[in-house]
Image 1: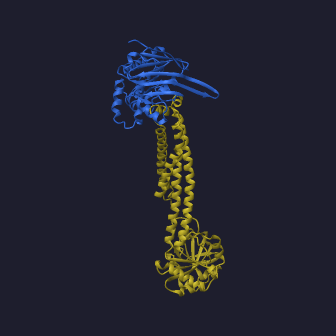
Image 2: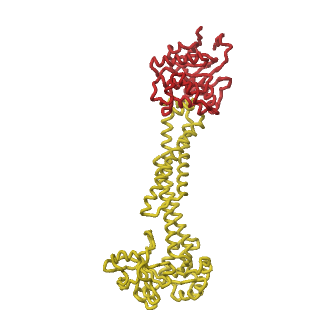
Image 3: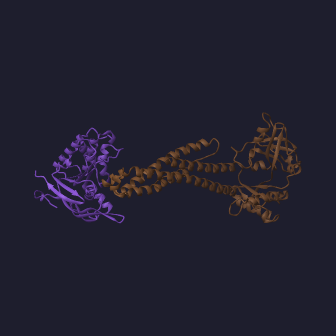
Length: 380
Length: 237
């Protein structure tokens, strides 16, 4: 029975983790702003919907997107809204208090509106910062917390890759926890012009384009493609919207969840073999009882059903305990990780445990049913 | 084979004719039973005696439909029971046969009352048997012990529970296999008295034993030796 308990427990915990991941990622996406189109340098998302990692890495460094493409997109007008180019890069951030790895987002004024980035202190980058390539930075909340302990960072100096910047604002915290990948709260926002002149970051990582309306996303996508087709080769850019990326990530996470469930299923099978052992022992321990029941008029079917019910009961009880422990466990790990048990996974785990109980109960039950009553009664 | 004349009008419950039982052990052939024919009538109390290895247990198994003969015919309560499937045999046993074993064979984690009810689990359409089971146990002096488990009962009490179990479906014939073999002489005597009383009430009982003292209680004694009936005697009443 312990085997079934552990099997069901692991199915529920592992699927809860997978489920929690999906919910978490979806939430993160919601906070990133809506109606967004992303113009990436090259084919980042393949036609099948998978991430094209090689192409993504390659195209980031060999980006053919330029500021004049940005201007071209701005000239399109409706259904396109705001356009914001972004250059991303890894940076070292240093103050008197210490040093941290950060993530630079070099962009224009429009970015804050597109990505819904607010400042808790000071201000975001403004027009004149960009036009005069000022060395100003808006730092993520984590950088502010770690490098300006007990101080107001606004107006202070920060060194980014050995170049001194003035902190003009602190960005609001966006993520609820770290899940790997670039941490938004460790970002440092700088004017795009400054990044190109002072940090030597030339290549545009991607361009964010807002669709004027949620319903216009498809038309906006076509417009962006038309505008860029005139200026670039088709393979040098791609346009994706958030839902596509989300779908891709969901596909990945779905596979991951399934994989985790598969691992858990193996432990259920182990549990099932445990049940089979228990039942085989039960059959030999109760040989005499089986013989007696047969002598008193039990048919082989009666005996078989009795043992099948017993193994089903064992696995049901084990499954129920496993479900309770699984839900409690998911609540427990919630403190560290967004695990969410789903009704589906609970039903699945329960169904599978009942099925293992019955499937692995068949062999012992058949064995019991086939005993000869005389032999069985004589058994000591 | 001899059927006493004073019983010729009585209804035949069980009859065997020309029963043989052969076991093949490798290239050895064992003739356990050699051409056995006998008839048991309603209301008889019969003792089948013989030393161990004589074939009396095998004979009882065949009469109790627990085993199949190699040749010959078995008639039980008007049914031809010569070649039955396992399921048919189980159903006939359930309905027409009660067993009392030397080892009592009660289910240990089951109350006395439930032990008595056990055969009814396998009887189609059996309802309201709890009252009858209670009556049987009360008649056997176990009215205060209905909820007790076998390990809370003495050997004699356990055998009385087993007797009640044998009676629950009102069988045509009761087989008692060394019913006193596991009991002290006092409890054994009690069981003998109970069997005698049941026979007086009209029950047909077949006792299988190697104990000649026990066999004395029977009106009719069939002696088996080496797979054959060597004598079949009926006491004059």
